[in-house]
Length: 176
Image (cartoon, rainbow, N blue to C red; front, side):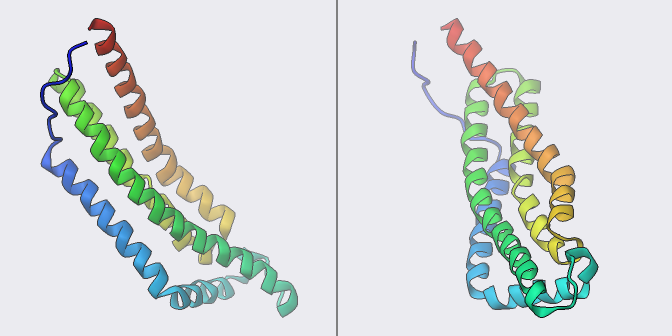
């Protein structure tokens, strides 16, 4: 099998989107650390404003356990956003570089780049949305909203793009 002579860079917009996602991930990570108390206070205030959503009964000893669990999930969502955004930015760059290099036909190349970029950049935002919705909608309802609005469509686009890329790569390898 002959090696690839030169790797081709993906379109600038793809690289820009991936770099912006990486920057947002790093700013988000730094902000989580710097504003940890402020974020926790904001989330707790929101939870106390929606006691029925969180199953709060008005007894501090009982409610504290529920609030602590919801605050833990809130913080976990922010951390998962940070980690997934870092990782998916790199996945977008790597996978679209392979597509740009290997896919010779214009339409499949553009479709793959679109799926991988939109899916990869959009998917981590679900964790941010999940965390932001927890104070008003509760842990499980917020997770369901994030799943249907973000994780399923954007994650599905990424998975479809990666499967298609694997098929394309396998087909090219079989020809050589």
